[in-house]
Structure formats: structure tokens, C-alpha cells
Image 1 (cartoon, rainbow, N blue to C red):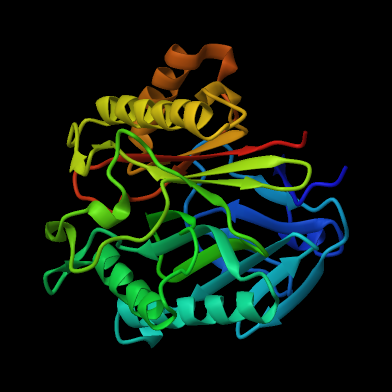
Image 2: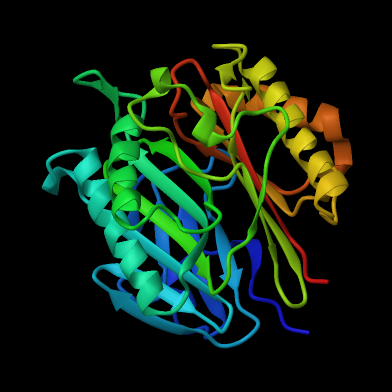
Length: 330
């Protein structure tokens, strides 16, 4: 059997040392600044400090040797099944966040089409001051405007929207990384949360565009990519300003998603403890201990590996988001 990729969290002192490993698809460190190694391969740091272990890197391994290239500033690596891409923009060079986002997504869509991986499966979007109000719009809403303009020009996605994360960093820059495939995945909706296209206009001039989760069935494996999930039921925020109650609601949302997927779409897992890993985004370091305690109290030794990252949520009053994945190799 062969698998498109696997993900491991490993102690790595120097990302550039992974450039020579022909089976490394990408590697990501979480730090106080955003940066990229001087290589075609996606080896980079995201401006989200790891609140627990600073030298841990997220390493993506391919079962077969990968090809690499740098296209219009986008680092890419690919095998027969998957393409991984990364870009980092200086937003100061653009008129606003919408303009930078429009340019970034234009390049991403052009790149995946050129390399014959036309279906985005998963996106990570990191931008500075995500919840800052500027001329009546949050930076996140400005980001959505720029993305939507490109999607409108491209005929929207034309397939199942990718799972997505949008988090605010503590440093400048617009940073996006993504995976794309030759065929689309299958959307998994959450029965406790409204789909993005049902959000009222009061949440911004354009609605966000993503899938709550995406199931991707490969030849020898099934993957599940869960978008960043907040304390939102329907489309309304719950427990504003209360991190423990918010985290509990987030976990309820993820559990409901997995149960629904197992019952309705033959997802091979049905509970959170079967996931491969979690990433928990927290607005403040001081929330780490109560978050860890709640997770351990709720799941004990069955808790999957967790990364705790310092990042800001796109909605004011929300303090925590959680994303997750199930990456089976059987």
C-alpha cells in the first residue's frame, strides 16, 4: 500500500536540514515570527508561538520521493496524489488586506491548475490583527472580500469548498498554506452549526466560504480534515469571554460532526479520541493551563496529540478555536 502523506510532530532544531530528505513534503515550525527557508520545498515558520514545546515541528512525509518548485513566490512540493503549497506576503506592499488576499488566491488557483492538482482540500490562512476594526471592517472581513472576488472571477470553487482555518498572528504578513489534489473530497456538515452560505449579512459584506470538514478517500486511506471550530451554535457565538465554556462547546461541536459523519457518510471514526491530532488556538498564554485541564478531564489518556498555539480568533469575544484531522494509513 501507498499513502499520499502522513503527519508527525517531531523535535527539529533546523528546518533547512529537512530540505535534502526526498520524502519530506513540508515542515512547519510555530514561532514568534513568520519566515520561510531559502528552498523550493515548503519549509517555514508560522507566526503562532507554540505554547508548550517550542522546538516541535509539524513534518509532512510522502510515501514516495517528492518533486519541488518555487512558482511566483509559492513554495510547492508534490507526489502523484497531493500538492502542498506555501506563500508569505508582506501586506504592507498592498493597498489593504483584501488586495493582498486577492493576489494570493489568484496565484494559488493558477499554481494548482498549472500542476494538475485543481481541487483544494485544506487551507490555512494566517493574517495579522485579524479582529482589528479598520474603517468599519474587521481584517478578517476584508480578507473574505479579497478571497470572494477571486472566487467570483473563477466561477467560485466549482467543487466542494476546502476545509479552512483563519487565525490572527502576533506578527505581520499574510501567510497561506494549502493542500490540493486531482479530485475533490466530500463535504461533511455539522448538524450543530450553520453552513457558511447561511450566515446572515450582519456578519460581514460577504459570507465566509469553506466546508466545516472534508472527507477525502484515497486509494488506500480515508482522511478527514476539520476546519477551525469555534464556540458557535447555528451561527451565533456562545459563552463570550469564557474560555472554558467555549472550549467545551467547541468539543461538543467536533463530537457532533464526527458522530454525524459516522452515521450518515460512513466515516470510519465516530469520536474525538480517534482523531490523529488537534490544534488548539488560544488568545492568551494564561488560558493554557485551564484548557489542558479541561481536555484531560474530558478525555484522559485517550486524548490525541495536541498542539497549543497562540493566535487570535476572527470573532470578537471568542477566545479559542480547535482544528483537527484524521489521517489513516489503513
